Image (cartoon, rainbow, N blue to C red; front, top):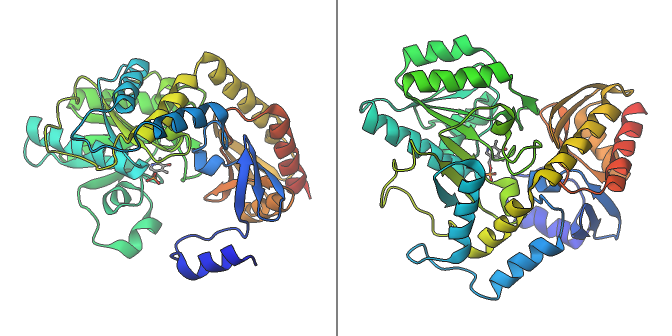
Length: 388
Ligand SMILES: *Cc1c(COP(=O)(O)O)cnc(C)c1O
């Protein structure tokens, strides 16, 4: 075991079950460990490094902002924050953006918007938010409460009240909760990521939009993992033909720097006023400069490449030996293998390919611009490990 791994084990909190490799550098979709061994990265830091490791264009955008000013408080204006908000609104049709530093915080903002909307427009006790069973919305106590998985809840009672969980793709279960509770918002992931990379049915998502319209409920989509080109559209809801009232996003947005965003439409843009929310680092100029570079580069051509690479992965894996099913959308893919997912991932690491897991599946979230030859090597490695 290397010194660094030993020091980490001794001094870093025990919350992560790390694989025994220490990454020291990388370029694009290749990372290098402390022994000089190279890996193809099919996880991109859990869908964060949208254009790979140490991408030149992204790095130049970040460094040129670092040369100007690395941080100012939100008491003053800075250019990257304003321009990123404008860009996100232009690309989505949303009207205003609140910047946070992570996915959980972006969701915290969304939850505040829905509650404040309910209280102002429907009545003091309209504070309940519906989420789905098997969802994942973050690790803060409130986003944990939103998350529809009991395993995350057990140790942290009492949780934030006001969350109820419907069944994915069961519109009746949603209608029942809307009747029983005083609901201000519905929050979903279009493709459940941590829950096993499962895309919701189009009919269900359209049904939710309709219920929200009919009952004056805020329709919120958690695009933390699915957003920023990941599913072959800029945001996953664009695959479904719906229009959310609130979008939260993070992960790939910053390309590797911490940033989260909560986007609000005409209905929700004025819900929060002065003093209702804030974040010291929110809209940090360096993170925002990186995010502008990421969002500007997610164009039609790149999205088509994401779709083509997705098709390539689905075609190669769907009928292969040792693979039971392939799920997901774009470059957000879950693979149910005959062998336990953890075993497949460990063997892939031995052979120089880094993959993730989600529940009982192997999860693939490569960089959006992964070179075809790197992708071929990774898929061939996964195929050979599964067929062993
Ligand atoms: C990762 C994730 C979060 C939490 O994001 P953090 O940046 O870790 O706080 C929230 N929602 C979804 C759908 C995610 O995948």
